[in-house]
Image (cartoon, rainbow, N blue to C red; front, side, top):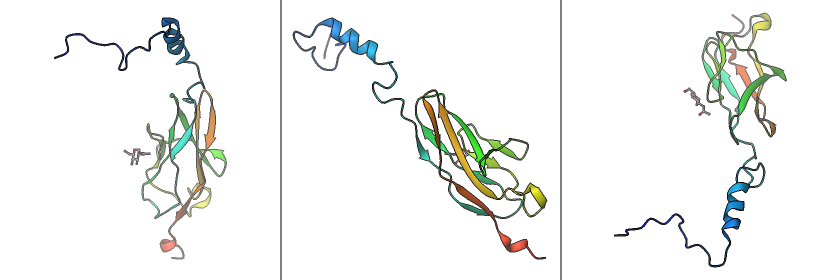
Length: 138
Ligand SMILES: *[C@@H]1O[C@H](CO)[C@@H](O)[C@H](O)[C@H]1NC(C)=O
């Protein structure tokens, strides 16, 4: 049907100088101009109750300009990753076998995720990980 391809969806407004288009194109990548820098949570961790040795995933998903780095805090201190506790590539925290009721090893506590990009950082709500008490008292 159409034999020519138009570079723009709408006709170029008559009288608008080409310089204005170039200016808009240049403006695009400038941080903050189009509010692309805003960082906010799409998913925040929720309270969970788990049984010892169960796996658990705490979700955290932030929206904003990439790269976004996600770190996790437990009771306000950075969670260190190990064989059992990992931050997944999508930002969620994965604990393969929840520990509890064994001295200081307990995973119980308040978890928060911290999302950062080059413009700033945001801290999620606190989610409490509770161990189910079924086994307690034996
Ligand atoms: C991240 O990936 C894990 C494992 O695939 C999944 O269970 C979890 O829901 C994901 N998190 C988000 C925020 O989508």
